[in-house]
Image (tube, rainbow, N blue to C red):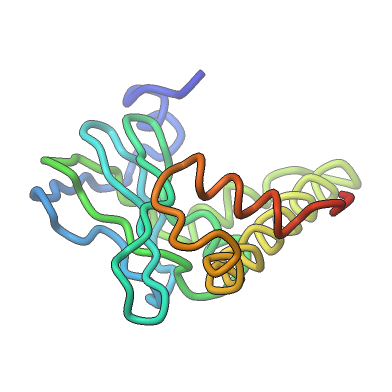
Length: 160
């Protein structure tokens, strides 16, 4: 279950809100991870451009979903562009505050949780970097089903 605005405000009480207009870029691929964004209202799409082709829509995000966690966890640049599909209100949380919050787990359990999150984030970023490879596997995957099929072909037999 996704957390509502009141829950996010309790976790990050001093975070600022920002309104994005329709088609405004919220996060730009290749940008640095200065902030985490939490969608409080509206919808956005996650896009990836590959070798000058039309953008491939990887996901659509709505209320309660977060943007930018991969870059914050891995320390790498943004892996995709996020565009507001209409008016979007987002909570803007500085990366330093997110890291501080994540570092709150004490002892072995806290270290394990942090390492697991970072590992999953790095694995997903590596997968996103391989988009050009699997894009050729089944032509231009333009639907969720096409993307899923290309991923299945690429990672057939991949044990985790």
